[in-house]
Length: 323
Image (tube, rainbow, N blue to C red; front, side, top):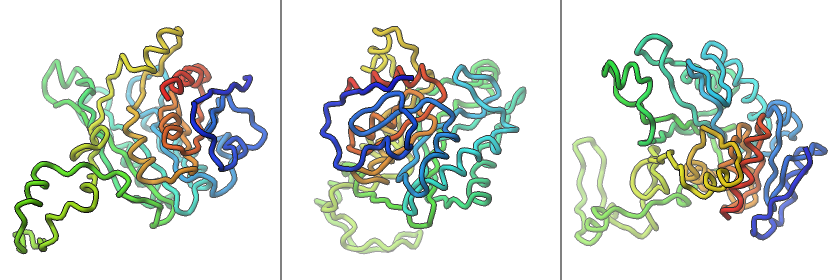
């Protein structure tokens, strides 16, 4: 596929062009800060030198018991399948780098019981490959459909599943991270408490509340591990039902096929801010519509996107018209 360039309007980074990381492999398209590649990401990542990537952020196809248009692997095969990618991810991460994996659960076929395939994957990533689990986070998506319909909307014996795991792994116990970059505005209660003051006390739980507890001079409150869109309050709550955003409208105008499983921009934004600095390299080996890439570009990070589907990556060019 011929390489094309997408002009984002951003200033060029002083860091080396990101295409140099993969050597002589030609990208599908490039921007001032990134490059998108069509192909099997296991083979593409094998071309990347050791310790070259600061953050891998991705959401691979889940192990659902029904087939999806963009492809997914059976639960019985999922762990071994994904470890092939994870071995390369571990190798190419910097020692202070992070690997953030969004993976959803699913029901077992024919019964109203949940699969534990993703927990088996978690254990394998830690115990077999040597990743460290830095923190488990949770994405609350209120727009999720009530599925499987048989158990949720027909027989009414289960409730709607609205939370997905976002696991933050690291290559060593000490990955680069700074929660000051994702501070949230103080709540009204905290601001009132600051004005009123607080007395030193010990809670029934044993936690000591000192006289500085009510101070609001840190620039914001610390984010929790349950994320909310643009992290304004307390949770990782990102709706994912956008049908009239700029990217979707642009794809419709051009008659381009839209990836059916896009995550919201706020999700990669949170982790890219938390775990990287400007000019760091962010890689998504299951890029789809390249949400992580466009967010990285907006935040002045270099990025690499990989996907098997040339059609989906071609459509992802439309994202850069938003910048």
